[in-house]
Length: 243
Image (cartoon, rainbow, N blue to C red; front, side, top):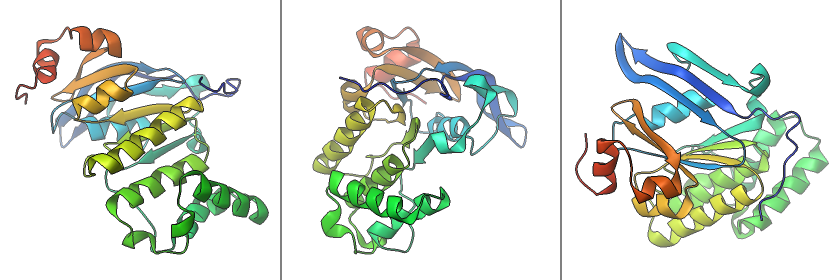
């Protein structure tokens, strides 16, 4: 059962209207219209170079559209309401515990609350035995687990995930997927890119497909996997080479 969240000050839905992004006059994303609703798991798919990572960065606000509009509910872009985890985790040259503590300092939480949050997060995600270990010496799976745990500790309303398990073995991948499912069950909206069709089938409630920087499909997961409308999406689902 999915936990309810207070929607009175929700930043969602996030709406993109005719959004594009160009560099040096070259369009990398074009004419994307999409609405991201609260409490859903949206999986974004497409071939390498389709624009998936750019799409996440644009949604998250790391880059701004060069055409079109991006706006949150009520017109309010609250940075503390969202978080993003990259394909390669960005970790500080500090211990695991210190990596969890640092964003809480930036959030200006009192020391006692930070200490309690760090301890709870370490315990929740099985990181307590690693608390004093340098974060950058962890295995790839442990680093990604830490990055996700750190994002969770900030209590975001929406979490953007850029292929969080692409370089991991099946065991580590399953742990990451279980974390994503747990976050979703707590009411955190998930927007995640993946090139792994099996992973998409396991996690998606909605599917968006990008092709050459354009949104060619956005449907419920059940409808998409039953039969995409766009020919490029059908080819991608069939495992054909699409570029």
